[in-house]
Length: 309
Image 1 (cartoon, rainbow, N blue to C red):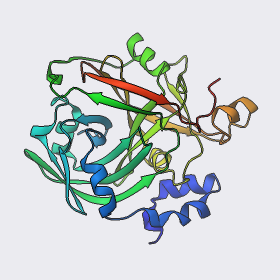
Image 2: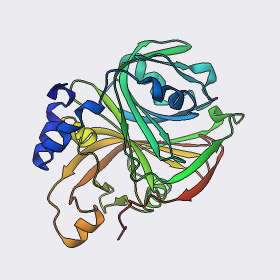
Image 3: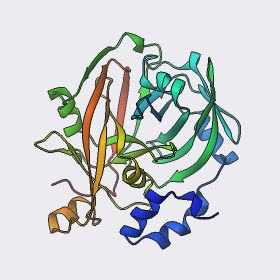
Image 4: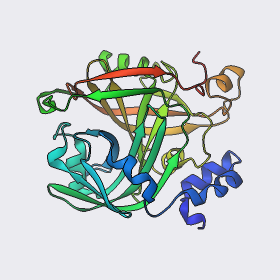
């Protein structure tokens, strides 16, 4: 494989942070198909995260869940979503977005075993069964995943949930973000290739500035910089926060930018030594109360989480 694995935005961030060589050694982990070993893991997921882009070019991050098996891998280069087996709200942005933009990015994560896997591709068929052609797939390290399991009641009618929308974050949204230890981010590059990733840390690792922006530390990782590379090329980004206690999901749409070279002792501690943050400016939010009904059984924080100061 060659540098076409990485687009210009990813390469720019890798160069800026001096990790081109390390990233190049990991190119082989990105494959154009799903390996047979990972298929059972994907097909048994009852909750997945997916990124899509609306008609204005704004990425959104969504949580889809349903009966195990609602997503199948009939062949190594194809995913199939059975809409009749999905129990999450049918009014989610994802379903409207793929009508106008086929590019999607999936994240499959199993917090109990701290396993995660990403698949990016594009929708080739709509209908009861949504078909997705795989463009690239790869695993991620277990760092910053809080161990536990979420048991969702699929008899719950999520389509009766209450939906609120706005621009500036309200008190409920700020409260969700300020105590969160996990969120999901969907981004894309200028060619439309879409990606969904996970960010985790100790409670309160995401802070809110006086201007209402989110300040997010970028911890040490695999040095591929898929998300930051996308932000470099295409700042519009979508985030998703979940409140496991009451089944609320908060989706944020906005713009992000990366801050490099934060070298004070406090900033280095907060970022786990990278000195890198990114700022997210919310432009629109959608909060669904009653998105799901479930029980989160927390086991432990990731031992890799830097301290929150």
